[in-house]
Image (cartoon, rainbow, N blue to C red; front, side, top):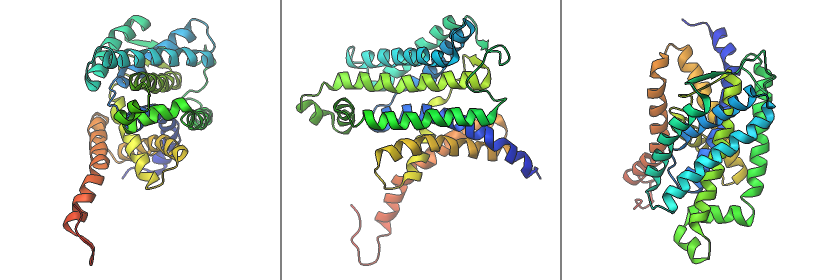
Length: 302
C-alpha cells in the first residue's frame, strides 16, 4: 500500500499548479461560459505565453514585467482567432484550430528550439517548484486580483455587452451591440489570461516547452465544470470566477490522489477526458432521470 505521507507531501505542489491552471481555466470560462464560443486556441496560446516570458527573462527583463508581454502575446493569438471567425467567416471551432496550428510554428520561432530552460538560480523568478509556499502565495494572489478585476470589468458597459453577446447574439445585435467586435474582445481577453497562466507555469517549472499546452483545453474545461458543480445553483458572478479557479485546484488534487494510488502518468489524459465527460454529461443525465422518474404527485418533465 502506498504511504499516505507521500500524498500529503504532493498536495501543496498540486495546490500551486491548480491555482496556475485555474487562471487558464478562467480564460476558458470567458469563451466557453460567457461568450458561448468553443475556442481551441488555448492549447498553444498557453505555450506562447510561456515562450514569450522565457525569452524576456533570459534577455534580462524583470520576471514580473515579462508577464505583461506574455499577456499581450496571448491577446494577439485571440485576436487572430477572432478575425478568422468574424472577418473571414470561418466557423468558431475551425478558427481556433487554425490559430492553434499556426502558433506551434510561431512558438518554435520564438524559442528557437523545442525547450527553453529558465535557470532558477540565475534569475529571481516570481514562483518556482522549489519554493512551494511562495508559489501558492503568488499564484493565489494573482487569482484574487483577477477575480476582482474581472468582476468589475464585466459590470461595465463593455463587459455587459460581451456577456449579452454570449447570452443572445441576435438580441444583442438588435440593441445596437457590435457582436463581432465583442467576440474578438472576449477572445483577446480569454487568451491574454491563458498567456499569463503559461508565463507563470514556465517560471514555476523552470522551462518553456513546445508541448506544455497540449491538452490545456481539457484541463480548462475540467476546471470549469468542476467549478460549476461546486457553485451549484448560485448565480453570483464573482463566485463563478472564483470557483472556476478552485476547480483547477480540485482537478490537480484529484490527479495527485490517482497518481499516488498507482495510476500511470501515461493514462492521465484518458483520466482527464473521463472526468470532463462525467461532469459535462451529468446535468443531461439528471434531466433524463427526472423525466423518467417524476416525483410523486408531480407531472413528468417535458
